[in-house]
Image (cartoon, rainbow, N blue to C red):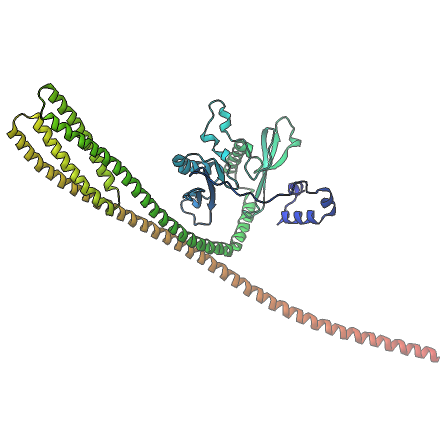
Length: 500
């Protein structure tokens, strides 16, 4: 019934009126009975057995728009309660949501088995998992969640379009569609939402209309443009107060959401720091065990190599040299892992590393003693190498301190940039608020002047009505006197007739 009315009529809250009429119509209630089975109780969701098998997803809206972004897409793992907050654009259709979900969730944790969301379905991820045997399966063929209509015919041409409603909530557009194999007399008006299968034809028609409008002259359009401008001005004046109220509500919601986001961010940072510390310490322990095993093996080989001669001794020395290279690589990896940890843990690990480096230098001196037959030359090289090792260790410590200082300076620079960006955003917000207040002041002044004019007109009308009432009273008295004189004259005439 609503679809039939919408083809020819439109008024405010038409859906509510049709619903109320249908509910109170006896014929509708008798003929259109409910044929669905009564819904039962809600079923609880299954408990996940491991992380990122089942996730829930929703959107948080109401934030101020920054670079076209005013939504936050929240994805929560139902097993570990780990949450991911993703910045999303204001208009976030299914394809954009799928791309964000794939980039921030599937890329790191894999594809979940199920997603708890009222409108998001796992089938939207088809295009990211193409089927080699059937490539057409990766194309989404289902209508959007809010559309329940699908056409089996093809569009031959879009002839015209029309728009109903002025506000964004009630505005809707219809297109006059000419279907293939049918004459123009059988063209039908269809809503833009139901024509989701023919987006290319609609875009081509709109582009053609915009090109035609831009090339046409403005001779007969001036009057319509003036009327449209006046109507838009009236709507803008009427929506000023509503926009101010919505802005205040948005600011209140933003402040509350920022407080919750700060708490969640602090908790995530603490948890992530603890997790990284445990993981890094485990990696460091693994490297340390490998180094201890290699060091013990090299010590045994050095002791046995001192008692050998000839080619066997050279072969043993090459094995010891390759083992020393492996030990150096392990120490380098342990150094990187130790410097990426927290300062409280890093100090103890760096002390261990210094001991391991001195032990490695001793092994190198042993290797030179084995390969060099002259003991004096070996002693001289050992002395020079120990001095160079101390110098390299000191330079490495200084380099580490410089890296830490540089990292701190970079963090400070980032904070200054962030504070400057926040200040600029605050300044822009203040300028926009001042502009809105100026517009409201102009509207109030205009309304004040209009009220004064109305008051003057009411005073003039009151004077006119008073003078009219006085004239009516005067006319009443005159008419009454005339009637009395006529009655008196009639009585005298009757009297003389009766007497004679």
